[in-house]
Image 1 (cartoon, helix red, strand yellow):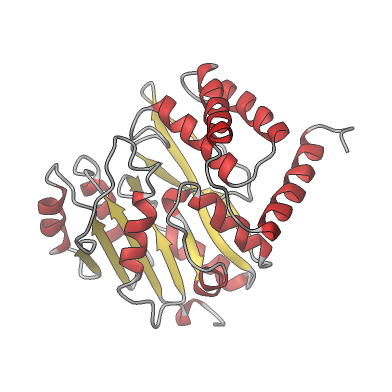
Image 2: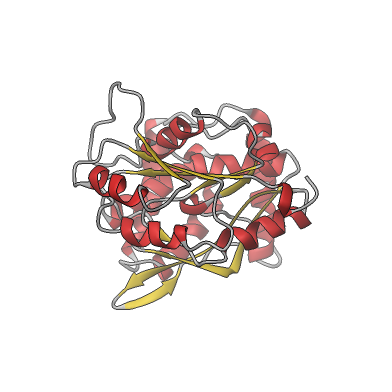
Length: 297
């Protein structure tokens, strides 16, 4: 793969009950300066008219295809994100075929992309052969304004990831478990790929991160993700402090994050069963703590 002319892009969008946002999302995708070669939208048994709206919108977008997961037991409970519904739906779309594609994107059904999003990212993949997973930044509605969601440059939002095929295959695909969008990028770095978020590419996230089942439930879920991914207690305390300062509701959000981690630890929630993964995570986190707290080492 030597340049954008040889790149072929598959995008998969898992959706459930996204009727309120879909028209914006589809309009933005149709306006891409470099549209996907195929866009598979997986309607995960929506109950709000999402399926009917998708069928109507797909008639206007030639590269868009709407599918449903294979029939079978469906996850129950309020917090479908904690039950890994999104990666399951993503994999259901991926199972339809990867032949011929060089890059695979995951795009949530509530994210409105800027027109140049995929063109710009694919150019960066072409320029950097070790770039494995990438994304732009997200802005979210808060008190009538659009506020940028701050993340470190090595982190890639789960809502709008783009993988090189080589990286996706090297990490063994996307795991169908809570914390999948931390696990995948960690494995990518373990396999010598780079993971990057680019602040000059800004997408609108119409439903703030982790709030689909309530903001505090979402913060606690992120704490459980940190446990599953072997994040150490020192890092978790620092992260909880930052979450409490930056995320709404302020203060209590950090406590919810810490609660989610400690509750998962007490219940001995299964973690990633890979000693190499555990060592890699702990080495990375020690480096980040030293960088955040000069004099610690």
